[in-house]
Length: 350
Ligand code: NAP
Image (tube, rainbow, N blue to C red; front, side):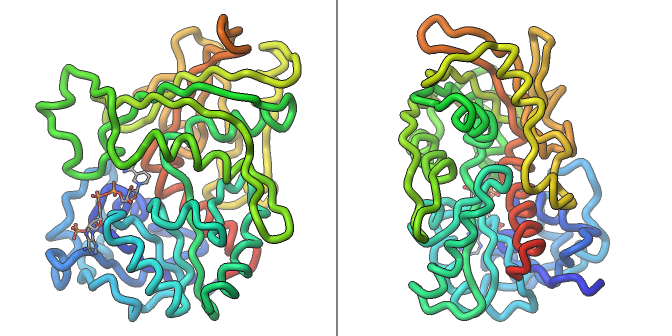
């Protein structure tokens, strides 16, 4: 099978490194170009990257020369792990020159004609690609995005609860890993032995708004936003990988803890039906142990593509509460984007 040529924009960053790890020997895609900022351009990837993953840099890529983020790269798909300060302009330039841009950055997530996709929930939102092409005069190019990493800890779970019982409102207290801030990220003097009750980059705003688009309904080529009210409180904690969230929900219809557990355990959707290579067989893993999920023990389940949930119990203020966990750089970032690209491939949109 001829693989689709793929470039990684922001290849040296935290998310860029995960792209490289996940795309190495991928059945659909082959990395043909690596790109980053001016300071990295012209250097061998292996010489310049501050590699932080527990697998080796693939030899072929270690020797690849980093190119500028300009739309003349030899690729059809551009996976973007770019800093949001530059992602807006660069991603637009690539899409207008015919690349399928699969982005992690926040810049276009809430644009009305850009799909913000979580394949288990809203694969149908890919229909916005045609609207986007028409609106922006793109011929073959387009932008598809995935959401902020911390909401991916609870999106799937809220989707199932909303589908089956209706979610009225919710609170989410996040405990976010330091890899979520990129490299070098949060200073060790700030975060070691500490909890910082703030995450920059408008994190709480993203948690309040992005789920409403993903859980929204496609209606005549527009997304009708979900009306769920979300109250987030974010924290940076001294954990390497894995965003944990303590969530409470108010439901519109009555149910029980056991019923919720069963529905979450049974949940499967389009990526599982299509058997996409990176799709977790069990997208939601329900834990019974009283002290799970934990980042160190549970982030790697289903190769980092499943979310974990535990401590599902009645809430004294709303209806139910639980603790959930996502691997922030896999399911919460690069893995989410690769799954989006696999969906595009399966739907013959590449
Ligand atoms: P990062 O480690 O700081 O990496 C940023 C990347 O952007 C580097 O490859 C850097 O290249 C490149 N870059 C910076 N300025 C550039 C410029 N002027 N031109 C071209 N390339 C430039 O950040 P990250 O954590 O990987 O995050 C990347 C994106 O994903 C951000 O938009 C972030 O919000 C989003 N995101 C991150 C996570 C996470 O868990 N980390 C989760 C979800 C979404 P150089 O090395 O050459 O400077």
